[in-house]
Amino acid sequence: MVAKNKHNEIVKAESKDLNFFYADGTQALKNVSLPVYENKITALIGPSGCGKSTFLRCFNRMHDLYPGNRYDGEITLHPDNTNILDKKVDPIEVRMRISMVFQKPNPFPKSIYENVAYGLRVRGETNARVIDEKIEEALKGASLWEEVKDRLQDLAFNLSGGQQQRLCIARALATEPEIMLFDEPTSALDPIATVNIEELMSGLKDKLSILIVTHNMQQAARISDYTAYMYLGELVEHDKTDTIFTKPSKKETEDYITGKFG
Amino acid sequence: MTIKTSKKTAVDVNAIRRLIKKHKKNDLMFAALGMFVIASLTITLIILFLDLVLDGYPKFTLDFFTNFPSRRAARAGILSAWVGSSLVLLVTFFVAVPLGIAAGIYLEEYAKKNWISDIIEINVSNLAGVPSIIYGLLALGLFVYSFGLGQSILTAGLTLALLMLPIVIVSTREAIRAIPIHIREAAYAVGATKWQVVLHHVVQYSYGGILTGVIIGMARAIGETAPVITIGALTFIAFLPPSPVSIDPPFLNFAWLNAGFTVLPIQMFNWISRPQHAFHINAAATGAVIIILTAMMNGFAIKLRYNVRKKIKW
Image (cartoon, rainbow over all chains, first blue to last red; front, side):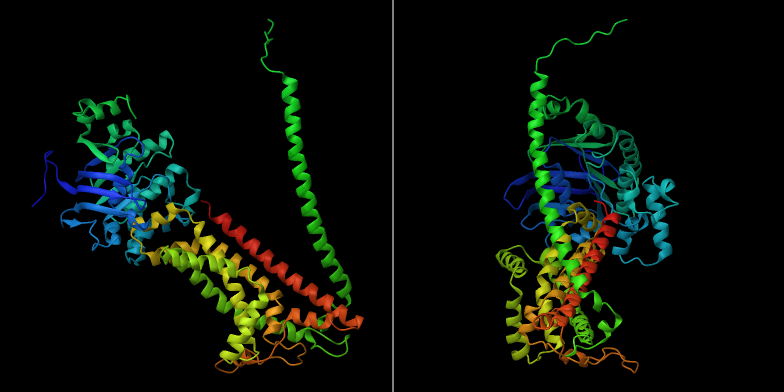
């Protein structure tokens, strides 16, 4: 059975009554229930500190890297209905299915080739021909192939900031994830690089589902299909992006969208 | 057309200039003080070194390096001392480096942060500052008597390894800590296990810092005298330990580990304590050799760090 919901979209993953506590006891998420639709871009917006990045980082169990953090509730990943927050589920398994692009471009201090190959190597791929093919595919998917195809052995640090971020997208893409998480992927980039990445993301949703955190409302309006507004760790409103930006049902959302607040 | 220039000023420009001048005097004073301190330190070191070189100059011949010590100062050389130092350092290297790096990685990456790891951390840092003679006493009781290893190269190597361990551990941890958190997260986010992150990233990005610590530790070990005297190194030795390599299979032998030995600083100490001036020349030459070795090792460490930094930018 394919899970559907009020928007009549296919649900790829959904959080149910998700609470999250940092090691110092602060509750960063309060009963957040939010679906991620298949082949759609879902944007998370809200003022700084509202929990949108915390929420995103639950999806690949990044919080597990730091002791003392605690999840409560679940995130179900379809089609196998795995609760990826379950202690019995290995966070590495989750990260192999759900990849992530970070706020600041963070390529490894290795060659362009090795950066993209790393996910494949971790998955035990040793066939050089297969790796070559997948790297080309991933770099094409990240619109970087034409710029780097002649210098794959160059250090990734020699690329510009925008190219580095596309390289990180290629790295996250090479392993064919089911969901890709973007944590303010363009906040460290110039306007032209930002446009490149936005176009890239719109192209990617044919293959996978995207959850993106952005502090740039125009960006959310431009690229996302669905938008969720969060405030103080709670989900205030989640709807089609058009609806959120033209006739939001909640007053708080409208105030934030129109710039009266935030 | 005339250009209109402003006639108004709300501030006293001359007062501002006087103020800046006064503040800049502090800059100047600190710079001068710093220059003075650094210059006096460097000059002292250079004078010491030049003094050693000038005194020992007549001994800088091949014979000095290929002769055993002798009762006649003119024929005495440092063959057994430099061979002894090399072999002891070999043991030290192979014991302290793997143990130190592994301990550093464990403490930084694997150990749970609780009161036990805090105690270990404080103690490791403290160990780096413990006087070396204490290590000598520990080694005398533990290695020489309890383990029955004798007054051998193995004992000396292990003792100096103890001395070097905290330096390697601390520098390993610092090098690991310098790796930015977002690079780590990138590796984990792709699906790497902790061990893969350590092997493919942590070790590879921190080896410059780790090796620097290793070399600085070795440079310290090469000059150590007190602990080696405590465990009973010989001061006069006119034979070499059995060779570690041979042309017959199995090519390696380990008999040298149990051999008696001396090291460069002890040889120097021995010569300096003799009344004859001729031996003092030998001591000066040995001192110069030790300083040159230490300087070369430190120089190598700096070069290494520079090379790694050029390749890795965060």
